Length: 283
Image (cartoon, rainbow, N blue to C red; front, side, top):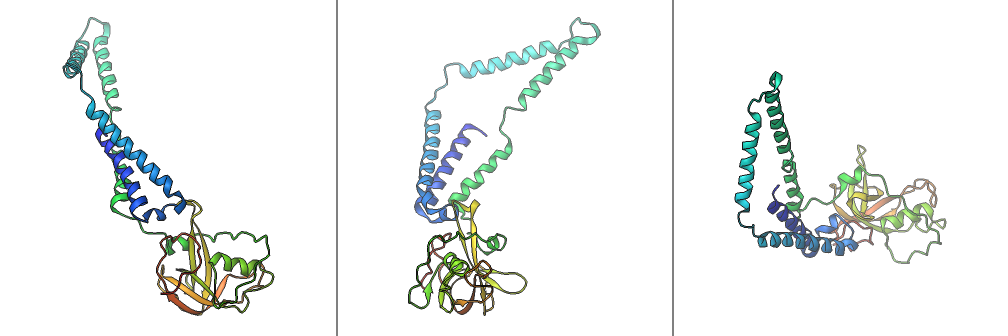
């Protein structure tokens, strides 16, 4: 890979990072929103490095006769190699062997002068940042991931508001079901928002959220099992209203985070889909 191509690769990568971080929300498919400034800084640095390399190369002027000197040196090298290849007065043909060894050394040196062709694949992620947005993580990923462990609530749970339905995140609902000794969610109508993940061969399904701790590589899922309605298409975003499905002992780890659905309405996917925020207002 020649130096101009390396310079182009730097500039493309920097431009791609700036494109996804400044002009689109695509970066949210890779990292948390709080890392946006770091993406912008990285893009600027890569772009400046590429421009600096291009300017430096463009400003260089070869010294007089450099090209001729290089060709002359190469010619001398070939002449010397030819001289060594001629037979000499050595016993047992040692002169020929000596010349052959020199040829092998020259060929060996040639094998390591170029960058491997596989390096051209580096252009694929650079172009993808500019031209192609990968699909967001969804039901396929969630169906193959374990549930995110819900942290233990050390403080006492605050009373639930008197509104009905009560808007809760999937994490809050799970924590209430498994840790709230007051059993405040028993009999209460709640509203949860997430996307549909098929539960398996039994035809059931989960309401799901994928949460980034830092980036897509460390994503984890929170799922609530839904009963009482056939599974909608996978990856459909819904606001689901219902009551806790009695399974296990409420307020203990044996309780299943599950909902008997009363109503399910499609909602738009949030811009930042990789958090567990309060439910959206159904459209």
